[in-house]
Length: 165
Image (cartoon, rainbow, N blue to C red; front, side, top):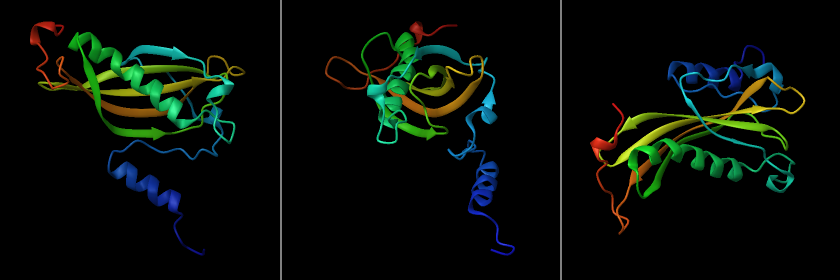
């Protein structure tokens, strides 16, 4: 390995050059990745995962986290759409750290794009470990798109009168 650049270093450099979110190896100590909660997003959901939500490794099953992100992501669009809507895309989903049984998960969301029939949101998930209260670690981030639909399930325009000033 003399003089070879590590794959992790190349990946990190590539992500920085493309302005993509940094991926933290799951082997990294969670508390060393502690961060502040966002102030530019709205807290839309808090939940504590339970033992029934674990995978074969004893961590929380990624599909369970995805379902919670979908619920959290729908909060802000529901206020704006004020009617039926559907998740039409999971544009990006990054698991940054494992989630453990008993972690208090906080889901923060913000609208990143408002179209004629659709709304895209960014969701960030932070874990507060029961034994490290007050210390938060970003465990997941995602970008999802929701579309307003009519009674037949077809896309419908989002009424601009419903949007906040």
